[in-house]
Image 1 (cartoon, one colour):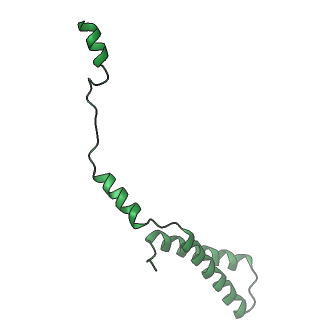
Image 2 (tube, helix red, strand yellow):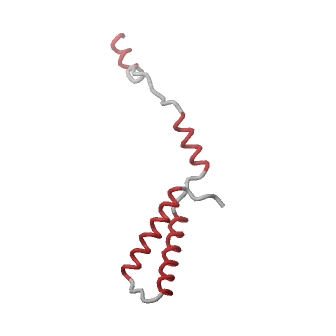
Length: 90
């Protein structure tokens, strides 16, 4: 199983924290059992979010890395004006 990326960890952790806070504020908690259920729901939601964040594959990282190392291709300034030069000289 591949390791999670930092983005996946960040999204999952933020989801756990914010969903737990929202559930605690919006739900009347009268027992320890209810608190445990809310914590479990937040944890499951955070795991679901972390797993659904798309992770870049090794091929994508290699492709973007190779593309970044390629030199930029430039066309000469006179390439587009070759027709105009011949008509002026002719």
